[in-house]
Image (cartoon, rainbow, N blue to C red; front, side, top):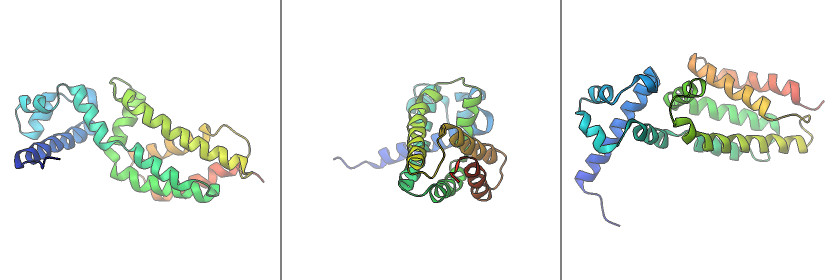
Length: 194
């Protein structure tokens, strides 16, 4: 494999810088309110340079999501939960989210905004990752139902309660670390077997 040249490294650094700026602008203003011109002004570069790296705003958005996609890390947390008792597993999950979500605040803000008001193809890119993550969580809950820890129920309901509460708290800049254990208790009070 060929070693990257200094020029290759500089190009990669510039591309990453543009992705960082795009992420921040999209999160702050919303995707629909950011133009290539805005991005160029913020990066202090010519618009042509952005088009050199990304053929369109949609391509830029796709690259932002690919670089900052939080779902692989969420799935890694869920994999750690495998076989754990439900309270222990959900506390691990909420602790993992409480750590990950502030680190990935901007991409979560973009995803949340797009879920509420879809205007771009970002959701079609995120959807397979989101669906795989949901499937893993449902399987975990099903396993806990089969083990007799939880009453039979539709796992999607407590999962949505948990994740939506975290997203709202993230946007409201509330402590996710404090929210997790309380939310787990409230949810488990409704679905745990006596």
